[in-house]
Image (cartoon, rainbow, N blue to C red):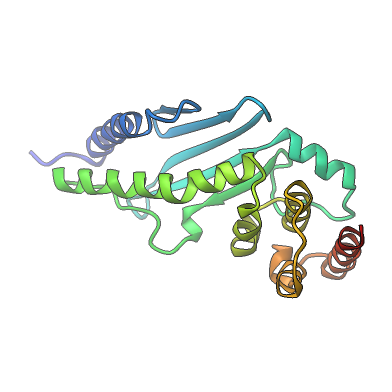
Length: 210
């Protein structure tokens, strides 16, 4: 008898949970639950959650990633930006969904091979895309700058997070990097564009002149 969608989902979600639990067991700060992965860093109090959500209309799964980082939030608050966050959730410094990414929502598998392949696809994206992004944020690594420049709309305050990363890593940008940092793209969303551009230019000039 052909399995129902409910049965297919139940079977796949159990399988992917078991698979990810095994494959990510080497990460001491990662916990896998049903349709959810939690990553915590004690020293900063930062937390990332990755949610696997079923999309009924497309019979596919999206991955949603949220990152909270109290220490970074405090740094941003000290700067007192005159404009609001790109993100609707005030507590998040990062928020993304694979719905906005091309070919990043795998279909609900209906065969054994499909289950195995889909588990591998999800694992690959988690290990090669999301975990590096999360830890670049957690540790405020220099690589965070490139992450933000490539996907600014996923970050609460793209420019300010870049500025903080430069200060922490004692990084002095050259002209090409300055042009990227001050570009309209790095604003994330262009509401209050002139206000953002003026403020960002002034703060970057202050940093470079220090």
